[in-house]
Image 1 (cartoon, rainbow over the protein chains, first blue to last red):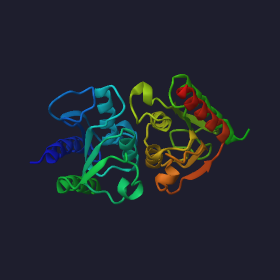
Image 2: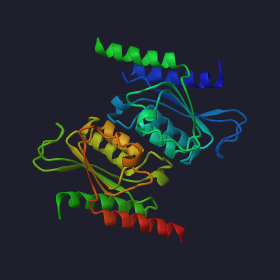
Image 3: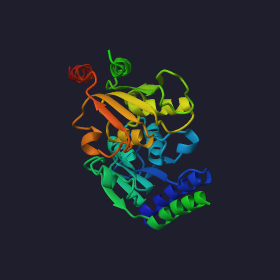
Image 4: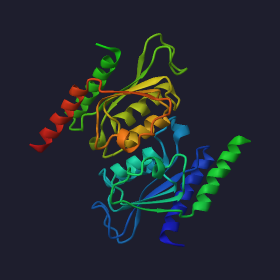
Length: 157
Length: 157
């Protein structure tokens, strides 16, 4: 298992928590990379500094996407609002809103699983991320996609 | 004073509160329109159901823009996550993130003051809003812009 797969598995765990609560199953973790960490972290290893899953139903709040929860948690961990040197792992391609937040937070790397051609930022706001942010897509994409499909099929029954 | 100017004046009041706290001065109010209100509201008049101002510094959180605060407050007021029949007034053109949130909330009308060519959604995510959302720009634009300029000049001293 690669490092990206390891953290995407953690994000999938968050997505499963969402599923169990009747929420659209998207999960996210934010990792402060070893050797490239914000000053508030000084570990030799990569460290998970925030995690979250979709809570829009429970909170009655469209802004409560997995990435927004994780960004707020990570900035709380660090006590600062920028997340340079951090990688955000999310099971589904971020929407416009979340990509905007990832951009404001100056996250250095985005890794996502399944693509979202209907709502994803890559189609509708391709310049949303910080110009230096690198992107890897398709990590455990089948598992991430399958969980979404199962959820929507279960809602149609 | 027109109705739009009345509510933009309230949004400007929120922006002044941000200014006084050392935050970038953007303010927002959300109004449930008379005759076109969500079911949880049944007034004959328009009603302010959420307000907010930028709190990114205080909360160490890039997601704490005025519009996000106001949307969260409005959905809390209504107990539901959609804001059809509502108008969002904000002193500065929303960014990509906030426009995405305005879209998810299905807000029916957006009114903003000053344009933001560097960060505004109209340039970088023109499809972010709900397809039926109507937009009015330039309401009290001079006052909204001037407050921003004063803030950034004061920071350079």
